[in-house]
Image (cartoon, rainbow, N blue to C red; front, side):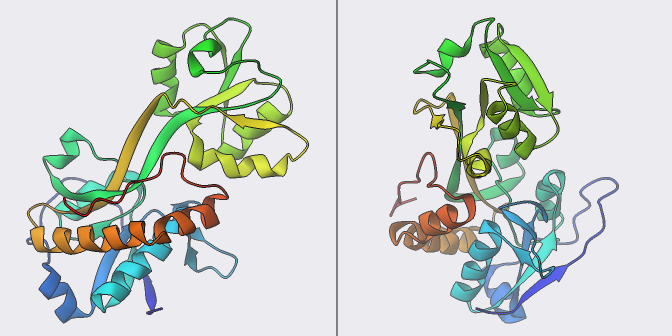
Length: 266
């Protein structure tokens, strides 16, 4: 595996002031380094491990991209809100970190085919007798969620009747269910399921009908078609060979809730 470099970057104070167009694939090869935006506070996608080195699903994917191009991976600290601005201002060549495709973002940046999915579903236990998420919409149910999550507002519209218990973190949400303070969590199943391993005495259930599925791709500078084409071909190889699914299962402790079907044409 090629050398991974972590580059500390300052927060963008204002604006997207571009410092030049996106670097082409040839320019990246010539430079010998690809700048990859990752969120260092987003385990298990990417975070600092016990040896103070970045690790996670995004880091493994980023290193494979760099190896396929034949360059070094330079991981740039890119918080969630910085991903699009950093691409627009050419501070990074590609952005990882669960970058969901949206029409608004597509006005500013380019996307590859999906790298992984985000499935909003239900984590509960065998103590709750339901078969789909709509059955949670009763007053005798307590849903747990994290303060500040966009899903809190979404669920208020779709599931208005349950009580809501708000907690501070992913682990806290699963703990509340294990302790009987809540009945279910309606959120991105993949980002929470690994915390259930801490409570092996609980019979956990994941309902098979997701409320919705979003798709996360690699973000690329707008109009950088040669780099997008290369990444799309590489992603087909990584998906069809099972590499993406293997890495996802390794880091999340379970298969992707909604697997990506490899697409040879894009």
